[in-house]
Image 1 (cartoon, rainbow, N blue to C red):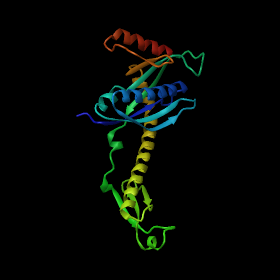
Image 2: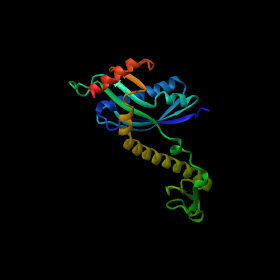
Image 3: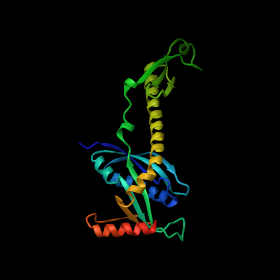
Length: 231
């Protein structure tokens, strides 16, 4: 059965500015293609590159029917064939970035049983009612130790709801940061392995997709040889 939610990491790794430009273009293409396929895309995180309009890495969540098929069509090495827009006389014309899927275990939903709630007395302005009633709520995620406090409302039930929402948001931000660090450290080795067989190839400053027949071994070998000369 097709999973309806997938998180994809687009990264330039430690590549030069040209690779961060490619990441930015791939991000735009992926979001547009998702919309065309009636899929919801959410950019969970993106890190800007050193040049204007470039992106070093991005996390994109894809949701909807056939999200798995969509994800598989992007996962792997992406190649762009074109002249550097940052170094006019640079001879290299083949640039590579990577798209990987984030394991679902890393973005699993937080279980209610992992959250501990503690009633507290609200502090600050609020009058006698606040001082007498323990309406504030501290929500703690037991496995990670991360906690938040909500004291916005006089209703303990409402504060519990707010605390839960804030805790889940904080945990999601923490997960994104961990995933970002993990992928940045493993990217270089994966790039070296996969760069000879890109899942998608784009070319030119208009970033048009180039169709390559995967059944034609001689053409694929020729492309690999040209890549080796350019690197």
